[in-house]
Image (cartoon, rainbow over all chains, first blue to last red; front, top):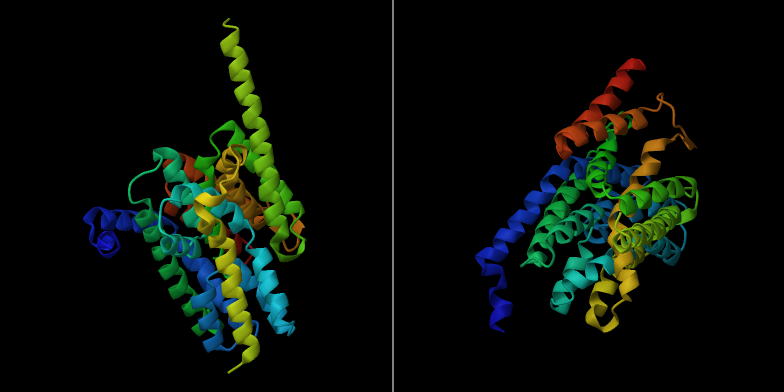
Length: 248
Length: 108
């Protein structure tokens, strides 16, 4: 009971919250660009402004929102739209499977909140930090700080896009800022052979499977990449073992 | 109230929550095997690669690996800048500058 009331007053917990937000800061230009573009797309597809704002604030899943727009415009049954959103989001099953072991010690409610606010950026950033430092203290605060900051920036940008849809020039290609921010996250992660092999397989598979519905190509790319990374990892481990057995 | 859009919103909230939180909520009760845990180490880098690759190389529906593709040139320049300076903001700025240069070169 005592713990439940005071966790957010703990200065160390708050410090980690701020650190998480600061860690997410460099990605903000990318988030802004994507948020604005998603907001514009929602209104231009015919969604009324109040509905677009409500969906942005509650659904909080950019890729699924974009995937749902043509289905809504075509007046597909609501469960088809929800199913499409579910399939588009399936990469988050892989993300949450990776996050699970780091958050299993926290309360159910805490885990529900941490899960809901997970994004592509914050997942990759968090995994980089735990890979470096292991189970650091108050990692829930760090993750919440990064995700909360990300959420706020995304919502402001998305609502700007919704309200000013006709004034925003999407043909400038500024939404590429989101891709560039992800690129900056990917490069340092590629500096080991197994990870590089994973990326080198995931990328072309995702490109060639991009025509599949509901972003399934993305999911297949991720799974193929993980399989390739595991194979190369086993190969590297085996070669190390052989070298240790037979010193030159 | 538009019931259709309300149902869609609720369904999408559920889809967001289920995919992101379900595996966190089962917690200690269903740990994946150590082999799967080890494989998941590679999930972030593979997800990033799969997310960005189509955005970079696909241009109006087809794969364009030539230097006439602004996104490809921008990504290469941004990656080179990042390897040099290790700055995410710099990486974004360089990439956007290249895209903008292409726009001007194409005549506006």
